[in-house]
Length: 153
Image 1: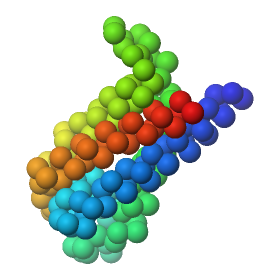
Image 2 (image 1 turned 120 degrees about the vertical axis):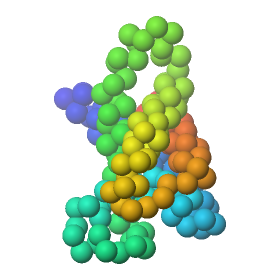
Image 3 (image 1 turned 90 degrees about the vertical axis):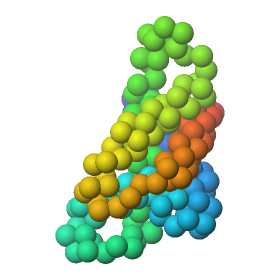
């Protein structure tokens, strides 16, 4: 029962960390549009792949994009909690919960946004810019920080 409660709290922590992350990304979107936020582009490609009528829409539906973004924050919070015991097994790992979470956030950026960049570009017929990648790296770092802080609390 305690693991179930831990996972629920991790989901809540992931949600609120994703809200803060989204607030950090908002100025990038306001200034440069979707090209300023690579993760929102990635989320739109994933969502539009699920719905045939949206594939033709070149301008993403912001509410769906952000809802997807927040749901990924919840899932990442749960994944972090499940992986947390394994951080003890890494040499020099487990420096602090917040640092572990920041490393986790950067790893998410690297695995899903950076390495998956070409796949999302070809699938969604979009261009993920270096500026968008940088904004995503910053926001994933913020996500990790607040995820670690909220899980710690």
